[in-house]
Image (cartoon, rainbow, N blue to C red; front, side, top):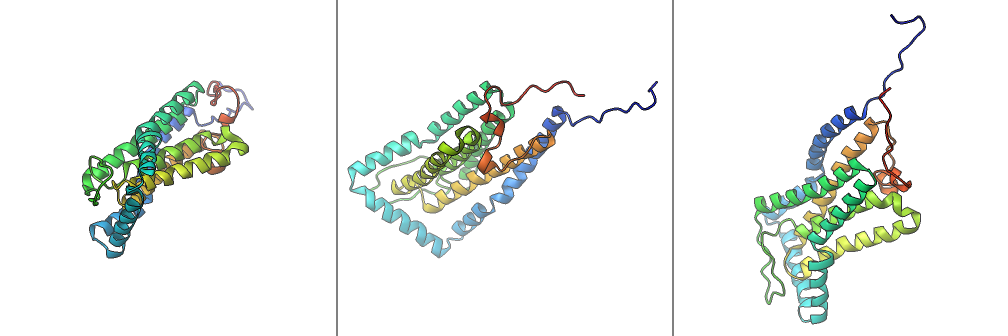
Length: 264
């Protein structure tokens, strides 16, 4: 029998409940991705309609950039090394895999899941769109490179946009004000550089690269929104992700996620 004057302390939402809501928010994030990907869908409509201004832009960019590097063996060698090495999708995914391993070591379980799921979803989405659209790659005179599969969107561009955004959102709290500008500059150079190399090597149209960037950033934005919703449901602060990252606790030494004591 409850004693007079005794009041039960209200229970905070448990992390288990928050985790269930995270699943719901991830589903909502998929829908949000559909909305955020509207510019890429619009671009596809213009491509399918063979809209003259876009067709001229694609042809002009491909022809000019390809011609500017075709007779420069040194430049071509650098572009091939970058495109098939440092900026290759496999290299970037390995960076994400190493990041996920580090997050697991820091016991940032949910952020590790977010990073892995976002990059995996990016690869699957890009492949699905490629197969569905089935756009032919550029056929330029005196080609200097060849690539298998379809052209739209650029898998290199989509992977670069996704992975660089994920890395920035994860490491922003760790880098601090001293190193963050350099990291952002490197990310921007990498994303833009990937697009340039794919067009200059003659394996993608400009619109393929633009679509890859748009889809990659839309996917990261949607899943980051779902992750922020989990923090809010779990009673954690939701800082501006661009200035403090998705999980500011990573700036601390020791585990990123403190142990949560019993449920009362």
